Length: 100
Image: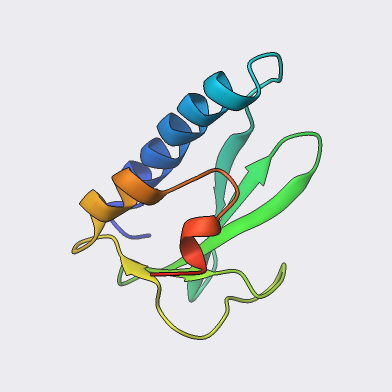
């Protein structure tokens, strides 16, 4: 697992808290979990269901999810280089993963 993966989860959690406080104050906050894998760590958003949020490889590259089992092609961010950008852009639903 990459060293900054916990920091990425904290950014997602904090940005989700702010987003829900503004837009959905009566709803419970979803949680983020990591399911480790050989090549990719799957970041899962847990609410009343489980949804893949993103994938992070062992080099800290962040990918949009293509589905439950695999990431889409193309690195979207890197945890070592782009953490400031992620702090500003990350949202609970992964919209920041579509456009760089």
